[in-house]
Amino acid sequence: MERMIASLILIASIGFVLSPVLSPGFSGFTPEQFPIPQYRPPIQPAGYAFSIWGLIYLWLIVGAGYGLFKRAQATDWHRMRPALLLSLIVGIAWIPVANLSPLWATGLIWVMWGSAVMAMMNAGRQDRLWQRTPVALYAGWLTAASAVATGLVLAGYGILGAQTAAYLMLGLALVLGLFVQSQRPDSPEYSLGIIWALAGIVVANMASGNVQIIGLASLGILMLAGRAFLAR
Figure 1: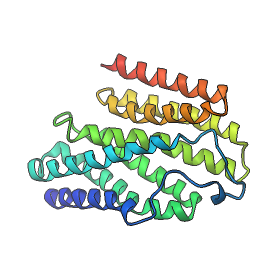
Figure 2: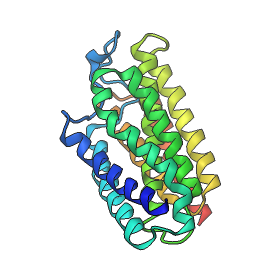
Figure 3: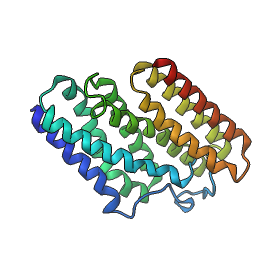
Figure 4: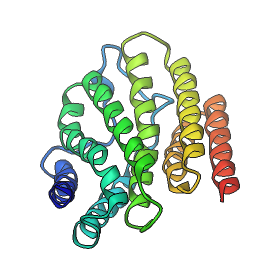
């Protein structure tokens, strides 16, 4: 059973990586996908920030391969695999769904986030580079991405203004990030994933001079970096 699930993790990781190749790709929701078009939304990171997926994809595949061929029956690896498998399977479908419906994609990304965080929480303390690090970085980015998607939906469907939605979701990402990091202080890569997204939000808001969002995102970077440093 352990070897079968380890094999499925590797297959799902490869499918996850191939998903952008077999679809039009994704670099953020387009303005016209919402009833109220979102042009330059303050919650959305600059396009370059999405390049982190290249690192996440590669590390997940390498980690899955190491887990299958070196740690197929290791108990500490097996504890995290069911949750990670769920996240990866949902992730395979995420880009096609996101290109069709931001609303459904937002629901799915929270499922991806929750299962990725659960996998990180259950990861063992051995083989950090191949087991915990890729999952932590993946979960960290998803923490920010889930908040960003929700902020866009709130503004795009007229529930909140774009600025208010950005405040709320940046705050949520920070609270979730600090809490999860406090539960796994041995995984600073988790905070690094969120910090990368927040830096992208800072860059995206520089052109418009949105000082409030720049300040809030910068504060989040400092708090997460400080928490990760103190944990060490």
